Amino acid sequence: MRITPSILNADFANLAAEISRIPDADAVHVDVMDNHFVPNLTLGLPVVESLRRATDKILDIHLMIEEPDRWAPAYAEAGAESVTFHVEACAAPIRLARELRRLGARAAMALKPATPIDGFADMLDEVDMVLLMTVEPGFGGQSFLDLVLPKIRRTRELLGDRPIWLQVDGGVSPDTIERCAEAGADTFVAGSAVYSADDPNAMVNRLRTLAVA
Ligand code: DX5
Ligand code: ZN
Image (tube, rainbow, N blue to C red; front, side, top):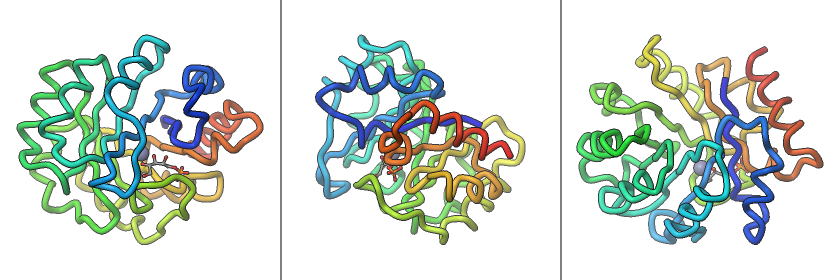
């Protein structure tokens, strides 16, 4: 079970310090938004390049952008260990996944809550992780969508025991993480739950304990 906190709700003026508050996190989840694929704008490649220099933690980049075919490889070149693109925005997901792996990153594909997994069953071996959104992408602090639970179960069924991670993102908290784990998720993004806690690192460990239970 991996906990990968999102820094979306952290203090953007002090990102390196914010990351140092979660030493027990398995990776840092970085939400890149372009105000086109989602109605919000966050940060892009220059900030990720700076984060790469500022921390040794694994960088898990979640691209909520149009044209990931064009932009995603640069994040792998910048030294991100994992790069996630949305299938809804991607013109050639197999080609992009292969390119990301060739550049040394783990390749991951993300699906919005209403996007079915079954059309992608044949390309699962092309990726190292599947991200299932459990809110509509764009903002932190939204309520977890229980309607995604059957898709988490279905994806786990399709993955079987292949070493492909199954990540959930959106509304993950002490109240919802057990449901996700029970359905088959093994990698958990939590933004507001971690960064609104008085002790973010204690929350990381609490979430991991709940996921394992
Ligand atoms: C939302 C982002 C998430 C977000 C999660 O579009 O992809 O990573 O930071 O935030 P919470 O955990 O608050 O739902
Ligand atoms: Zn995210």
